[in-house]
Image (tube, rainbow, N blue to C red; front, top):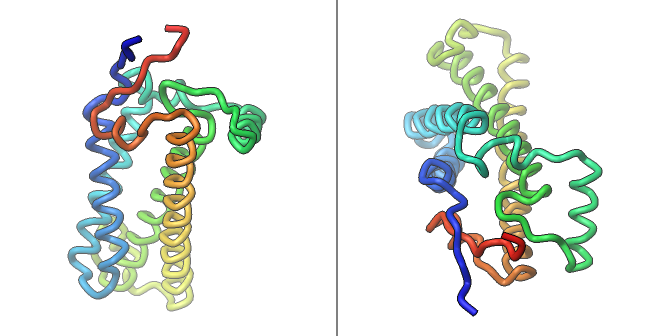
Length: 190
């Protein structure tokens, strides 16, 4: 029997995803060593996030928050089913994946804002340049927050990749391929 594939991820979602991977990695590895590159990559990450939030309200079906934001009880039940290797297959983001998207967006927002603050305090530049000359303790607090949320984002990425691998194995389909092509195997009930 021939497998029917359907379009799930639109070009914006796919380009956003892979650009975010590239830009976050670039920002993370450059740090203070290549400050200009770090700052521009950070600005680009923030701009991508804003576009993704807008797309979460007005984008295609599976890109919308309404398609993948679930109650905590449903997320927990899905994770338990996944651990028992009997999780339901979703065409778009599953409940755990949807929660991960939200956590990543919040984490990236906190990385960005804290980075803007550090740049503003240390260099009197950027969107928070008015913080230039602030106290050393405020600068240190923002630096600690920036570093914490950047590292927390790395942890989220590791968990995200583990989830993608687990779901790909459980449902015998490559979610990485789906994020490249935009297509997935149709649900059985479709």
